[in-house]
Length: 93
Image 1 (tube, rainbow, N blue to C red):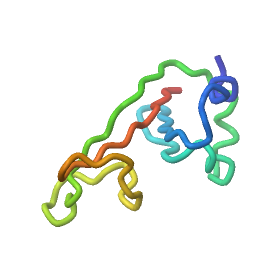
Image 2 (cartoon, rainbow, N blue to C red; image 1 turned 90 degrees about the horizontal axis):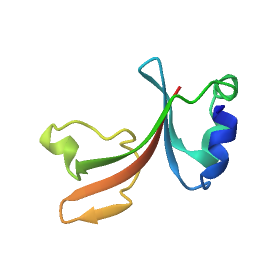
Image 3 (cartoon, rainbow, N blue to C red; image 1 turned 90 degrees about the vertical axis):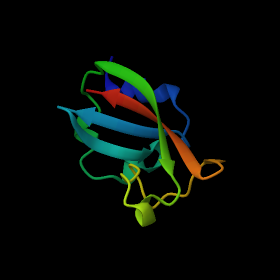
């Protein structure tokens, strides 16, 4: 299945992470893909795997010198005490 066809099952507010040759080529919301550069040529690529991956990070990751989230500028969607979680629908091309 092509990426263009696969993306039709997601909502505009869903977070996506697209990986090609083990490198992230897009990380963000589906709705913002149209404004991202270099994404159109990926639309005819074959989807090899799909996996929803939760990202759980400490809210104070910068202060504590911990690994940053994929999109550190985003506010958390879910808060559990001092943790935050985002769900990325990861598509491997």
